[in-house]
Amino acid sequence: MKKIAALSLAALMALNLAGCSQPAKQAPAAGGAESKTEAEVTAGELKEEKEEQPESKAEERSASADMPKFVNVIGGPTGGMYYPAGIAIAEIFTNELGIQATAQVTGGAAENPTLVHELSGECSITMTSAAYAAYNGQAPYEEAYTDVLGWFNNLSTGAQQLVTLEDSGINSIADIKGKKIAMGPAGNGGIDLLQGLMEEHGFSLDDCETTYVSFADGLSALKDGAVDVAMVQSAPPASAIVEFAVTCDNFKIISVEKEIAEAYIEKNPYYSYFTIDASVYGTSEGASIMGVPVMGIISESLSEEVVYEMTKALFENIDTVTSCHAAVSGFSLENAATGLPIPLHPGAEKYFREVGLIS
Image (tube, rainbow, N blue to C red; front, side, top):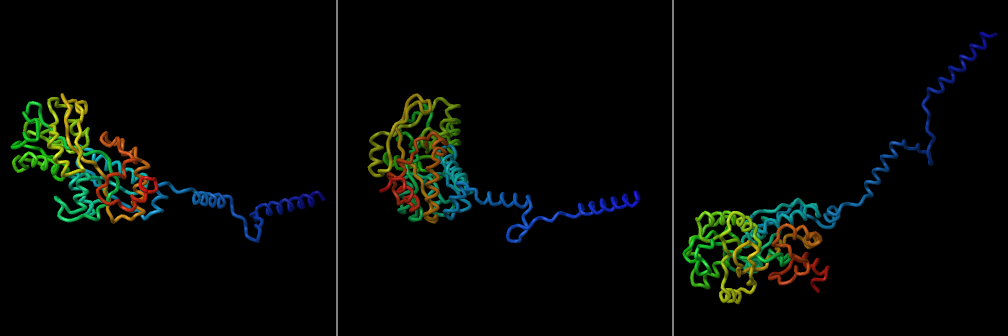
């Protein structure tokens, strides 16, 4: 009897173990479908959360306009403020618009409109006088660049600074006749101005021995005695002159006589005449020099919406520009739409209207 009971207990236990080894079947979900596993639910929730996250500022702006993938910002020569400003603008485009933007070293203000016209770059900075001449096909431009439009104005004042040694005996433009001059890089905006000032004195560049090198190399040649004058075309303080002053303390900036400046400005009203203090470079005295506002130019090939977004990004991040060089520290939105010598790009005009600068 005990043997029969033991066998019955063993059989019952075997049945229970067999039942435990079968996989548990999940209860059907509403509608007859089986419910998802915990892993499937978690993955789905993460996907939905990711899809619901807002896009970055750059992604939003890129989506709102057909942004180019690459943009080349035409800068200028090293040793001035054009190239650092170009780098700052490119940085804004990259960070705020998701564009792969780079800045290019060039000869300077006179060359830049041609590079934008040829689409070597989409935007640039130049002097207002150069922009006006390029748009209207005046010398030195052989055709009218009506596809190079205004972007903004008053980035800074590009100034012609003629540097010589204190004991050179050169005290005015007239004294430069027959001298050796380092003109800076070919294409910089100071070349035409110097030619014009010489003509006011009755001579020309043909009466001088000229070389075309970087601003820094020109100043080195001056220090070594290879040239008598080195020209730097940049808003003061020009970094090339600041660096030069570290190793040379016996130089001066040649002043332009008031009557000569007034005669030139009467023919070329975009220029201004002003004084830089001796403290700018640590010279023994200040100097009266000439300059012209620096403006932004941009290609007509870019759409209105793209240029609107570029302009908006630029002025919403203007500190990136004003901190790149002392010469542009005064750049502001308030003066950006005044005094432009050529038509604005429709995209820039749209932004300036939106912020109330244009009625």
